[in-house]
Image (cartoon, rainbow, N blue to C red; front, side):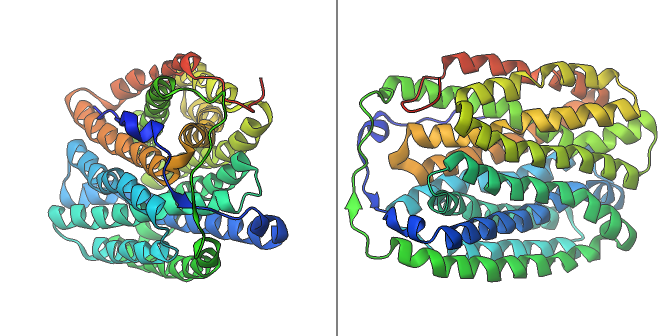
Length: 417
């Protein structure tokens, strides 16, 4: 269902020249660094708010154009495939040469994608609009993750969690805004959200002004790995395990994000607006869990947070298909809180495994997250057409069991035991 991420041996072993970020800058300007961290997190909020609108307006598109679940899944695939394909490429490019203003330029793609989606009256145009929004995400995530790390003051897990909090909270706002605005006013109202993209462009341009002197004129420096750092073989195994763990987490979240509305309508007969509010409950819990995962990883070790966050959600996911309406809402809160705490730890763990490929690894893992979600949505949509939505949720309930693979992650030097 997903293509394996293959990292060449030479990429693991060979040090790569990258801009040397002077540690004195964040220390001297702790206040401005935190302001930048807040700005990049807020931009992530705006970016993912716009992206989540696509899944939130699925019921409208389905009714307006008589789409089946497989076609709904293809919209998600078009949106997320561009991000999955291009994020590692963007990350690899920015590893060699930082692009301070690329974030603002990439947000322009999201701006035009939303405008196109608001006026699209053919299925093919809807797919193109979704792909443009995905392209904006591809440009945004790798370099913004680097900026978050630069502004962290050494608290990498915390910085990644603040960054993820903005994105997760933005994702949770999509269903609410769709229920309040898009459902009452229809597909053309999506154009109103292009103003959010414009605000994000302005903020990201200002962040680019701060970021440019941090990397301009710096000498290239090879990164020295700790003597106890895992060897290339263990790095390959660990990267494969982290990808598999991200698979279990993201595919389950994708199943709820794309089809939970239809599941609630089909099983409990709730209205579209009510179902979107129930989806908001799950996504808001996701946002809270994403925030706490990073600091807990800094304190107790990322491996243990990964263990808990994925495997710990299993009892709740297994119970969800058998719960009533209120019980489903309660269970999704626990699932969102627990399973989303893995995201920051997985990404930071991968970055620490290959610090000389920071942008590429950020792009791979953000890209894999989007790609898995897109492929998963397409496959699950086809499966739902052939069986039922209820069957899909029974099947997906077992995905967190893949958390057992965390036993193969290596002990990193400097991590808490």
